[in-house]
Picture 1 (cartoon, rainbow over the protein chains, first blue to last red):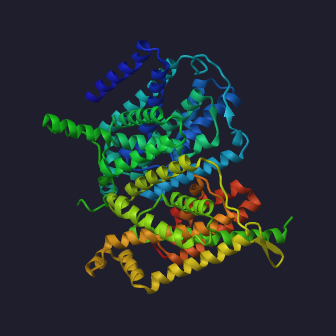
Picture 2 (cartoon, rainbow over the protein chains, first blue to last red):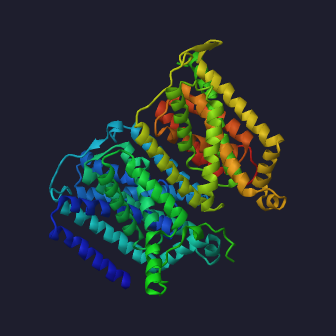
Picture 3 (cartoon, each protein chain N blue to C red):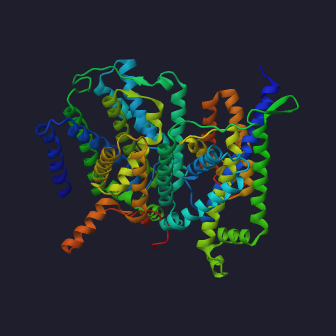
Length: 338
Length: 290
């Protein structure tokens, strides 16, 4: 219930932002933060709650983006209908990637590398076929209407993305408190023990990758609506995969608010570096890389946990109802804890 | 339709490139075999080595082949320090953590290179860059010929170090049985750092052989990451001989795939081999039951 209250508060605050301020910079920041949150939250369901680290979330992102663009441009679909198609298509790709890799028990780094290889295969294929516009990419025609899901005012995008992020947050809350989420966390913490208790790890992981892929695909679809352009490098290149996983890990994986915090903190930092160093290409990513290294080495549970431990230091009480897991615990070999 | 000269030329190209791939993969498989970690920054480290060779040539006028001892030492030092002071902090046998850490490092390296050298593709021009050698009916560029023998030579040197020196014995002991090696008085942390150093030293050598016939830009490493992962998986993870054979095989597959399917689709073959082997034969081509 506490989670729901917080979500309502978060949504109410964010939704009212466009009514308070009309500053383009401010609203643009909110749009990009919500967009990054959506990607991170998607990664968090698979990586944080189910312990399957994907390095290739771009495979879902790109599929979503291309379906969103192609459905409108070649089949004349309405943008909102296209978004449904785009979610369905990326869910299908998720099902495919999941059934191929989980069926044969790929785990840990190997799963990560296979997802990355999948994204690369899709990238090369999208470069070679014609309906994706190959290397030229696809340019979505301007259609600044509600039905076209393109907005002149940034506030439209704020509300659109907020809707999707809310879905993601509610989904994560459900996962956190439901049987399904308990299964996922059992598979994450000790797959063999989970199986011994009657859980089917394959099914659980498949559901997780399905949810992750759907949200990521939605992120891809919104990307197209935001920027009206997509090409193989943007769609299936490593950028979106890295963005999703770094934000989730920085915020704290396996927590409800970690991705929100991580995505916002990273965006703040990259805006700051832009102000400090100007538009040097690459400086942004250097910061991303450093932050990732720092978090993995020194704060493996992410910023939210760091916040909790500081708060407990200050207020001298321990807060223990968080379900986050330090990265160390994810990797303990089965049997070690028994 | 079938032109045997083109086929032969392509085959020869594949074999020479494959030897360099093998050398690169040798470094990766050593790190995997000993430390049981996947170094995702391997490609980015190769990029650093290539820029090193380029800088030595552009600033000091040192020939890429003459830069070999310098590059091997420099890359060894880089690897040693990386492992000693950064990577070992993530702990061993926690594979995703190390993967994330090395991903972070590769992002940092790649983008620092982007800031310093910009995204331009650079090449080295030497007197022999454009010379060719005829072998039977086909022509092979001279740098590729040198690269083939150089890569084989360095690989042989590394294998003999592994086989016949005390250091090699210590490394193999740690790879096989860490605790036992520790009990025998081997400084395991030191061996880890040395292995990582040797792994990157292979990249230093590979970069010297590669650059006269190749190019460098900040993202050049990406092309090599999956090629070397695939070779390591194909040859059986941690197996040196497997990496050598796998390297040449992948070189040939890439070259012939490029000839018949086109440059970019040929690459898909490598990814498919990678996924296929990881899923169905994780022990590699020659391994027994996992």
